[in-house]
Image (cartoon, rainbow, N blue to C red; front, top):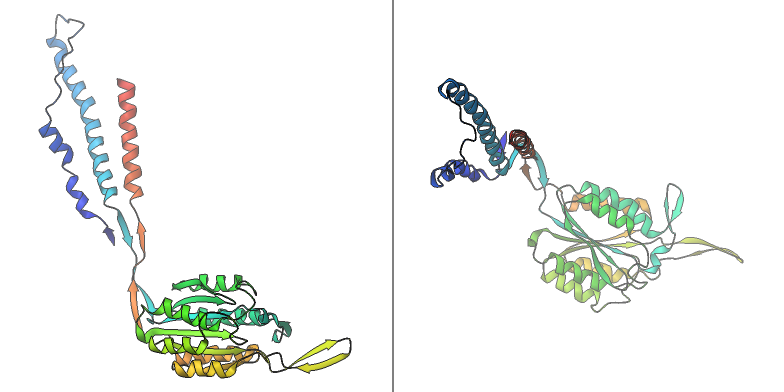
Length: 326
């Protein structure tokens, strides 16, 4: 169906008639330069010619004015209603970019990759499944900063996460500051929809706020935090003296992550490989269901340029006529 955004502008349609009625017509003061002795013989033909030549530009101008006013009302074509699932949940991802994230203890398609690459690989599917959620992205290292505010545009969130790089925010780990930033960005949202998923592979080594103090503030602001400890329990290191097994996750402070989750009503998860990380995201889909209610919207297509182009074309036709016969 056709919809007019500003239909009240149709009230200006009689404006030319009002101007014609209020402003008197200009009287002709020109005198005939040639006297015709038998004027009556030419009067009928002259009157008919003048009448025909003057009336059609007036009709064209009237049509152009109507089209111009119609364009000003901004006509739009409304499409069929489209159903859109909206959960009402505001979900923030906080991803660690500290230097330890470059450890290559994850495998994707039998190829060793660093921890951040694994997070990007698995998080893309998780973000894509969160239809109806508003998602934001926090990146943290020595400092924490907001990379993406809350948005329904999941593609943008995935793109900006994919463009993040290890060390971009510094080599240390400010877990408390990341939680504090999430509290600040979510505090004005509905209390029952605030969720933070925090992924890190270390302990808090930077920042102004301790993780446990930040967790207390999160609990006071009804922010639920799911913490994910990233990193394998063992990996093979080859050197000049041979191969040996090491634990690349010795810096992971699991006790703090568990307390953060428990204090805020969330859960702690351990991701030792890409498969476990993916299973965690699948479980989060169950813990935080996606669809809550449904909304409908109708796509709109502007049509104003059609009457506008026709009005300009008719105006050009009148101008060409006046130029030719003036």
